[in-house]
Length: 527
Image (tube, rainbow, N blue to C red):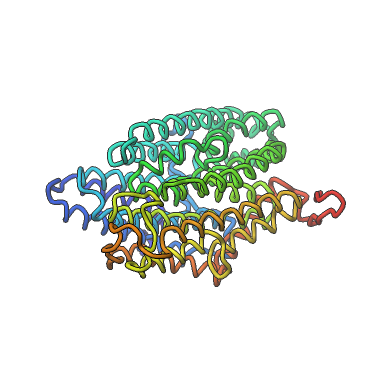
């Protein structure tokens, strides 16, 4: 048990890799056995991650826990350094939960190259978990790039009619962002020794040689020149903003979602988009506080444009999956708005909303996939009155629609409400513009539900549709449970996040806790 506890992060992250290696020895013609094994591996991966939730010390949730630090590429100063705080913990739990659900949803949807498909799904899981546990920039970058390959093939091989176009577009966008992010990492790598040599406390803790240690970069943050932070923030911004994706870097997302298989869309929306927001939280804000503050107006403007633009474009979509894809642009705009409010409410709401988006939008993509498997079309005009023949499906769809639009007692409300509090605390106009996105979001989601689920069945092709089976219910019910859990009792999530969030705010706005800002009634600003 001690060995398991000491190495739990490594075991959780690399368990899917072990499952993938075993899968290579399976006969590719035995599709049923391959599916059973893939489901077993990722369900077991979720079970293995559960002790993290129970063993994690909430009283020190801002400190890295379950740390392993082993020399790796010593000539470069790179270590196998892993550990998690409260922010990482929630994202890891989200990843290990969505992984098996995405794989389970593929049971009947994938019929060609089944073995290769599950190999890439497992590889993707390793890359995502690795990103969230890495405390070494070299290790982080390796995992970041590992994710790119399986997602490219999942879209390009098992996608829709325009799969190659979508896959290449996804690859090129992400690659450009990765290269710029790498330049930022290398700049920090080369400047570290000169700063460490001038500060004995940093040198004593991390040494004076070149290092990729993320915590060492956190330590030198107060001593980084303003101009240096300005340019490094821009380099990181491109890499992370593409991944989020923020307006105007979002154009790869609708194509990737529409062409990807259902499981790919679930993972893409549920976890991959969180890589960008996690990058801002873990690196940009705490390492580049002055650069962050300089770009707040730009980040807030882009976030608000994304909220409104994403909602308006979603409303006009004739394709259900594309509608949900554009809703992601709007929802992730909320996440970015809360984050760059740079106060505890905004940041707490931003992180909770990341989890909510993974739950709600992941579930909506599963729902679209279920109806697509029955009708082989996602065109909204082809449906109507589906609740008459698929009552259970209609109930599930309704719950996740309400979750997505932020109905009280469901998860979306908690995230949006907290973000709005954070935005209002900084500027009245931010909250007003963001509020318009909430109204638009409710409009397009309820309109979608009305057009597909309610009324009489006009299309004969819909008259004999079968309702959800047990496998499909098993796929969606865990997400419904979590949606109600966060909506009814979010306290455990806030307790995990409060300390790491306050730590970030203290780094980026050292004077914040000396006097909490209040709304200025004259101009709407708070300073």
